[in-house]
Image 1 (spheres, rainbow, N blue to C red):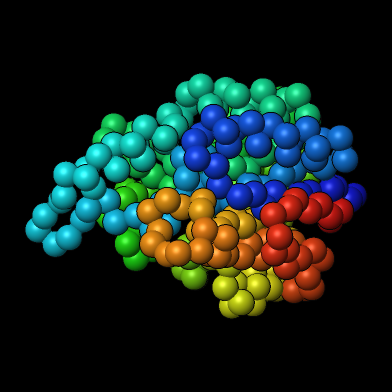
Image 2 (cartoon, rainbow, N blue to C red):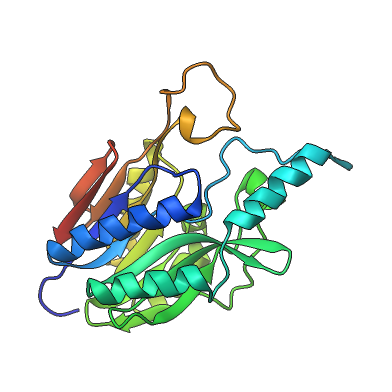
Length: 264
């Protein structure tokens, strides 16, 4: 990585459908490009949605009909890779001269994967990373990545890769990325707890790399499946951040819905 490049994390609230989210991504890309950013990181499962509060009717030994219907709707909200949404994201990357790192729900046959897509400023889909180990109940919903998609791309802004949410607690996965010389370590997540910042600072120091982490800011009303009386209750506080190689917090933690950029 040479010189200083402006990078951004885009902390967004969920939308009801992928078309609305694509419009929101469009606006963020336009703003980031106009402000000189060269790379933008978006949260885990941004397009397709993080299924917070969903059970999909799954109990041991049984699947309720309404749960099957909920899963069908979730499958419909996912995207094909490559596919129309990938083409649209590529056009945004090209229009605004950005590297994009975007969390999506990818469908492949009857299986859904929590995936990160990488786009170049030329609009090319550079590749993807499928989450190797979904966390807890996510395993009822998402397939397992097989380890063949763990790329680190050598780009003009630095060597870029991504590790999704609680994959960051897998030491050998972190080491695989360090061994590839990662310089901009992207950590899209759905974890907004206080402990997340310490994890990101540790990784930055351990790998001597810049760490960008991006999460959703969401209220209960953004997740219809969640029970509760107060639609304005915050259920995902955000906490997106940019960390320097010595563990110093360059930007964040960000708690309101926002986007933040920093030269690194």
